Length: 245
Image 1 (cartoon, rainbow, N blue to C red):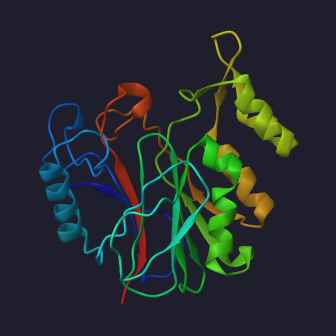
Image 2 (tube, rainbow, N blue to C red):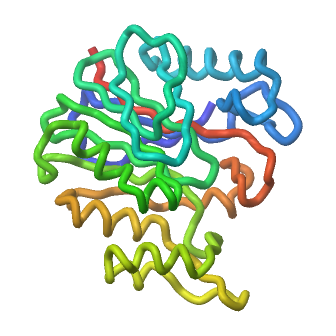
Image 3 (spheres, rainbow, N blue to C red):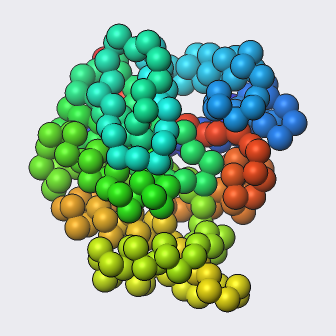
């Protein structure tokens, strides 16, 4: 199994990773380590993949999966996990609790504070990003934004993320600097959006300037990543962060 670990100056007891599609038992359009239970894969395979992930990486359990709805709700992770809440971010204030978000083109953002006492994870498609899921995650951490580190995990790259003019207008209406994150597409009336740059702009406005990552394109790297835009029905990767005991 292969996964990606953030290259950031987080404290040593902050553990974080983003999975790839390598190492699982799913087959067909889900081939590999599909962790999504909502995409049409056989549940037995999804459960086997999740168990394998936890065994090989040492993620503490129970795993607090979310029912992601492209909103801004932040789930406070606890040991009393029963069912997936409707939320697009998670935060944890004690050791042994993992924050998890799933993606297949949307942007996963992992957070920790410099002291290593708080962690959070956010699922930021363009709707959630525009609505404020990153800002909500920062607020839930209860730390000054200047004390927070953020890592941008694998998402669709700026050469592949085509959106309509209404998306560009929505971001520019809130932040004029967002104009730099859009370039015209070859398709009339469409734009290529840089979701990494949009996230950096939102984080900077919120006071978080220690931002890392943003180096992948899920759409163009089919060997390593699932991509909803590329394949339609497909699996999901997970980005996970926790404080070690």
